Amino acid sequence: MKVDDMPHIDEKEIQKKYMQYQVLKQQIESLYEEKQRVDAGIREVDSTINAINSLHGQDEESMSLLGTGVYVSTETKNTSEVVINVGSGVFLRKKKADAVEILTKRKKEITEFNNEIMRQISHSSNQMDDIEEELQEFMQQHEHRHGSGE
Image (tube, rainbow, N blue to C red; front, top):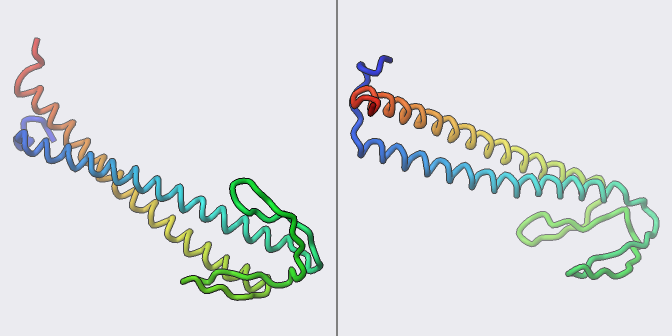
């Protein structure tokens, strides 16, 4: 589109576009923060699955975190089962394989949510690109109509 053919954009429209741009920028920043939390959740699930798979069925001694970097030596009597939070504060005793299956499903759900976040980031980023292009076209139009100031 030639600069002369572009419709005149008034200052209010530019302010509106700029505000939209800023809102999209903030949304993307929030989405990236959420994505970091989701990524951490995926890593935690992977770590838990690995920990469950490393249990060997016999009595084991380990260290249990009490909090703030304080551990206590513990002995695990039955490592063929684990207690897992299945939601709403409900904990169930499950065989290791069943717990891994639950966690794998949980990871799949978290990963799908992560993918949705990435789609939202991409969509918002595309909108930002469109607005930026419109603002650049306006600047070219403005410079053409008002001269370069020389």
